[in-house]
Image (spheres, rainbow, N blue to C red):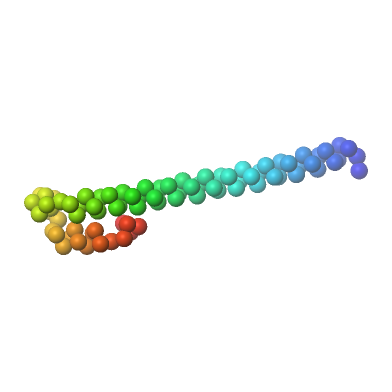
Length: 81
């Protein structure tokens, strides 16, 4: 086997290893972005439900929501929309 053949094989292995690393890191970044988006949505749900629970009867009447609607909403787990 010639030196050129060996160099080509080593070079090809390095390219394949780099491609695998790029694909893996791309998947990791995609997964992290999706997890961040989900966490932000859950956080928003929690905050807005807490704010809704703090509204007065008069404020609820102004926006057309009954106290029972509030109870139904604030008793949902944070991960449910």
